Length: 406
Figure (cartoon, rainbow, N blue to C red):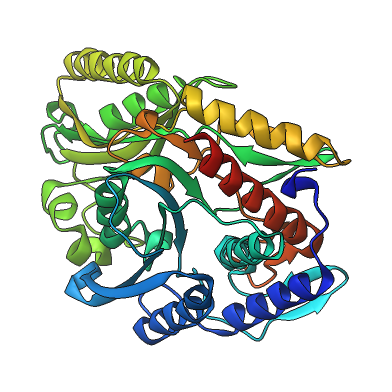
């Protein structure tokens, strides 16, 4: 019998629900420093009796404001560690949570206070069964994951350098007859196209102008069509701003012209297009970016407009390592011993903690360990309590496997 297939004792499960209600009652939207610190206090209160030494540090966040990072681990110094990651922040401020029809409805219940409660529940289950987690377990909870903030990125990169295994408490997903674990996440490249043409009076000297906006729009339409189905790369032109150079160069001030007839008689000599490529394989990324760059040269020459293509930021994909696959397969097999089906999700689209690791392929990474639910980032957000119970056992099983196989 594995812990993934072990029924969570009723008192322990009820305590997990009480903790989740307490966590969801704390308003901890990104940037709400008081609420974020309150979250660290609640989690430290739970972890300390379980043999963890908790530490809260203040880190410079967005706009330089201090933000809390919670780390907790058993006493002792270690060269490498099992890193378990969560985040304290939510998108929305909290409203009072409640339980109804097998669901816990509350702000952040799914993303990801449910994962935090499941982790504490897993530690309690291990103790109940006379077991212990890995003695190199390092738990870290960051304050700004929901805004892709600098504290999250720095913390994961720093702690990830010495991690042989990384577990992430983001929620899994529902599938027909079961739930998922995440073993793959797409990488992301942010790009920008800067188009510069020639201004002219559109009524008097139209043919002397060279429209940067028209050339950039033609390019954007073509690159959007480079997206491929299934596991292929996708290209999204997320924003396009065009007009005369003064307007585009200072759109924060010049946006007052939008919705008016002013300066519509100028052939647009400047346009910016910004977007992203998401991909599972680096070779796909390079192939698509090369095509985008070649197309910029082609359309620029045809329209007599200068098109400059720039790669702004690269975030690597998360791909499962051999050791990560071994852990994932073990969890799937453990779940099969009940009527619970786990499916491995190797094409999750959103960027998350594993993408910020120095080398996501160098560690055993399992994401999506948190419970499933729905309504993420909305006022209808909820967590499935049956899934919470299953995930408590699943996280406990993962910790046991890591302890016994590292």
